[in-house]
Image (cartoon, helix red, strand yellow):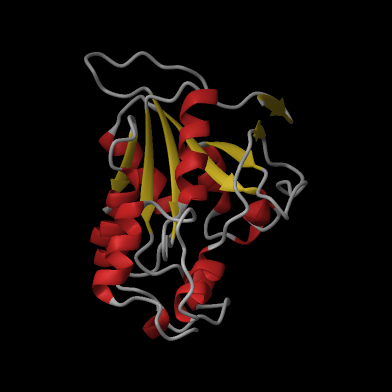
Length: 220
């Protein structure tokens, strides 16, 4: 379990006065629902990269899923409830924090915009964009990719079943080698829709919210 630097230097530690976080991980996603794999990824990134804070940014409208991905917006759990599930998932975990900045911004969620907002909120801090190996190859297709690479260190985390996925040529990145869980939100939704238990796959607080709101009862 280690961090390997690839394709040249990326990221540096900058002194910020006071108690402001100086090294911030950014873990974005739909989180529909958040599961134990998400939480473990945040913990591993926090500990292996010596991060002061990992923000879980909840996508307002994940355009890669609702647009080219073919997911209907009506099939997406409303953002406020997804945020509540992330807050429940992270409860008690030091340095892991749910963030609603993408929801407040509204419209399609673009990582370039998120990084710019976080830079304004935490001036002088180093941002580390945490992505799974399943999406690394598609970085060139993101909106304003040059801004993404300019404003954050890209950190690739091997996702089980997608080992070896790496950014396209020209992207500086770090590889975080850490144990992750083979869990997917799609599988969880399908299990709930089939009346099966998801114990051990989502935090207890998330399971309670799924039950309270009757989420995923109809399989997508």
